[in-house]
Length: 376
Image (cartoon, rainbow, N blue to C red; front, side, top):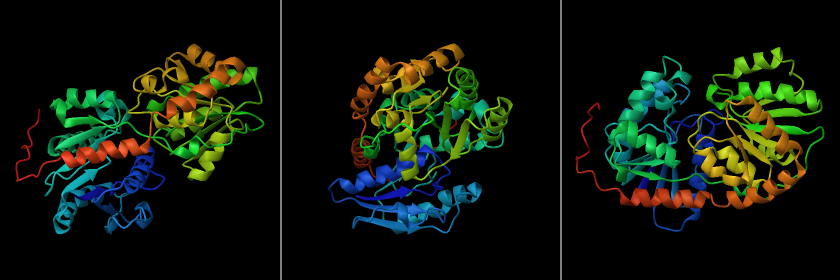
């Protein structure tokens, strides 16, 4: 097959986990033997380094900027279909939620979550109508969809009234480098959280609990890595109000080598999120053998299993107890450090790529029989 990859949404260092997803997916595609050819549509920010250096891969640069979202969406809806036709593509993979409404070839679109349906209050009022329209159109105009988890698949079936056979679950993988990290805890010790600074990540709750823990362990620090999101300013203000400026670091998005170092030096890992489509940082922490505490919400609960200490994200006492256990209970820490890598090995990017390729190969020629857009 001649397969297009719609990477027009990608802003390096600006889209969080969906960037990690796409980069590892493309690398895994390149490792799978076959005759498929891949054409990666990039924008001006992405550049050509995204595309694997492989004879079956080609970069198709587009003169549009993803940071100008209206321009990117317009390009995706108008020029991208023409490009697909010019290259005689057999299928188009859309890894970032949105898709052309009038595609010239069958398309497979990836939904990482449906937060705009589950928690619309966490979206800016002027963004929400576009999320609703574009994702609804993508769900309707794609022949097949991929979901990161069973939770997201259930949401797709519920909110968009789709046929069950239209949606396949393709769990995410984990970077093998995390398994090979040489753990060397830093002094003074720090608790690590890898998370975009968005409201649903519950980092405000974590800051308040951490402030109480500092009374028990004044040397303890908190390091939060991830893209500056909608809650960044409020979290910085809360950090100052709690007098934690010297104890809490918001690093922003880190290059991978620096991120590995932060994981290698952490005494424990915490993921207090209230909503998630998958929860990739939890799997990365498990792979690294870091004693981990995480929310007991789905799908994080099922992904972590008994390899992490779980707590109700809106229960500060439960979160505090979970952090005490993973930080200072040596028996539990040893058990979690051993259980984490074994659990994380259930997730591989190669498996994600295999499921994705199988879904692409199941796509049928369009023959102009895509369903009409009809609001339901």
